[in-house]
Structure formats: C-alpha cells, structure tokens
Amino acid sequence: MTQKTNTGLSLTDLGEFGLINLIARKVRPSSEVRIGIGDDAAAFAWHANCLALATTDMLLEGVHFDLSYCNPYRLGRKALAVNLSDIAAMGGRPRSFLLSLAIPNELSVDFLNDFSSGLLEIAEEFGVTLIGGDTCVSRSGLVIGITLYGEQEDQMLTQRGTARPGESIFVTGYLGDSALGLKLLQEGQRKGSAIDRHLDPVPRVHEGLALAEAGFTCAMIDVSDGLLSDLGHITGKSAMGARLHLDKIPLSPEYAAHFGPEGHERYSLALGGGEDYELLFTAPAYRKSEIEMIFRKLGTPVSEIGEITAVPGIRILSADGETLQGIAPGYDHFLSRKETRQER
Ligand code: ADP
Ligand code: MG
Image (cartoon, rainbow, N blue to C red; front, side, top):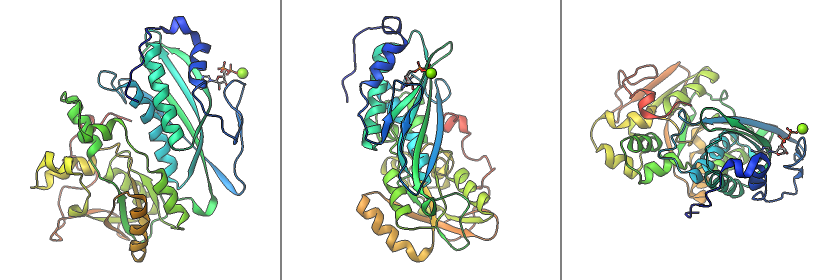
C-alpha cells in the first residue's frame, strides 16, 4: 500500500467506537475465532496437543519510534512484526492478537487508518487474526501494545537454555542493517535497504516453524537486542559459552559498502546493534546440510557463525584464529545503544 489516506477527519469526529469499527472492519474472519472484536472477551480455539504461547511488546512514541520519519503504515507492520518474531523464536505458529492503543487526541484518523492497514496486512500475510484490544486517550504520545498468541507442540518448542557444547551457531539473514538504518534516518536519509530493514523488519516465522518441525532440539532466540547480547542469553541460560568467527558474520551488500572492507570496526553494528529480528539458533554440526537445505527452500540466507563451548564467556576470533581483545560483551567499544538503536 503506497497511497496515504487523506480524509482530514479527527478523532473527535470519529469517537472511540468509531475508531474500533474502523479497525474491526478490516479484520478478515477466521474459523478459529469463535468470538472476535465486539464482546467483553474473545474466544478462540487451540489445536489439539498444542501448548499456547503468549508474548507482548509495547512501542512508545519517542522511545521506540519517532513520528518524524516513521510512516504509519510501516509502524503498523513493525508493531506486529516484533511480536511475530518472538513467536518465531519459540518455533511457534502465531494465531491471534490483541491490540491496545493509547492515542493522543490530536492524532489524525488518517494516521490511524494507515496504521491499521499496515498492521492488518502483515497479520494476513502471517495468518493471524486481531481478536480484540483496548483503546484510550494518551496525554503524552502514541502507545501501541500488542499481545500475540501462538501455539506449538510441547516437544517442538525451541527455547534459549538448551544449547550444548560443540553445537554450531547459526543466524538467518544479515546483521546490523537495522542499526545502520536507524543511524541513517537520524542523519536525515529516508531511503535505502537498511532503512527499510529498520522500519519494516521481516519476522522469520516460516523459518522458525521449519526448524521446529524438522525436529531440532536446538536453542533459539530472535536478535532483537543485538547479536552479542542475544547470544549471551542463549549461553547464559544454557550455562555455556561460545566462540564467534568474525569473518563469518553475515553482512548485507549495503552494510558492507557503507563500512568498507577493512578493520574490525565495520562489525560494531552487526555485533551490537539491535532490531534485526533474525533468528539465532544452535544445532548439532552434522545437521548443517539439512539446515542449508531447509533455508534454500525458504529462500532465506543462513550462516554458521560459531560454536557453543563448555567454557563460559563469548570469544570472538578473527579470520586467522586470533582472539580479538576488547570485543566482548560488556566492552563498550561498540557504539552506545542510544546511538545504534532506540531503546526497547
Ligand atoms: P470492555 O468495556 O468490555 O472492555 P471495550 O468497550 O473496551 O470493551 O471494547 C469493545 C470491543 O472492542 C472489545 O471486543 C474489545 O476487545 C474491542 N477493542 C477495543 N479496542 C480495540 C482495538 N484497539 N483494537 C481491536 N479491538 C479493540
Ligand atoms: Mg466488558
């Protein structure tokens, strides 16, 4: 959708229930939802043998997004995408979600129309249904809260704390683009693939499901806080350590062109920047070719970037096998978070 709505209506013209209707009439009915928007609570069915998954994320104006460069359609997409990514990281199938909005009175109906179009289009792309929510007025900025439900069979869930020594570490896609995109936006640029990655990330739902269904008992997490931080969650929860090979960290052509070919500096955002929403997972090394086949079918890049070790801590190795001093979690050689991403 590229066309922007332009009716000039205000929220006082529409009212709370007018706004809920504006959203509700874009929701495609689903056979799994017995009672959707419009009653005191929603009712929906789980598949037999599945556990219910639930995740929630808030996006606050001025903290997570800036309306000076964030268009409402993409904001709607991203608000759901970050939740979809969490279900993906569990190997889950996303099903339905609740949307809570606190809206400043002066925000236009056109903005909310475009926001809900983006939100409900990505919902349809990933087969999830909006089943309810809450709406109220905000005295300071737009607040978007989404609670997403999903499901998966118990034995297929992929958690953070199940990595074992010797397992290979893989990551989908490219790292650092989102942080680069944010940096470019803050410098005044408005176009480019890194900016697209920041404003409209693609959650790896199909990839997470494919891994779960292939029966990997791997550990998995989505890269929302940055590679080192999120790998630290896997190693911490698993009581393990890790070795990372710097030259194997996947960098996109735009990222590589921006930083040039030389030096370890170019890896700062790929290691420390957040919001890439790629999947980081571990699997036995002998399953590498199976993994590559799964990802070839999906058309998604996947890279083997290191190994889980019994020795705690994360060691980063250069191409010639030398341990890089000072590039480790806790060392703030990497740009501070405020510069590389908005807090979340
Ligand atoms: P209640 O007073 O019982 O909490 P509400 O009047 O707040 O109900 O909401 C009426 C219906 O509209 C409910 O089904 C609720 O889930 C839905 N709803 C409210 N706000 C939203 C929203 N932002 N998006 C989707 N559904 C919403
Ligand atoms: Mg009620």
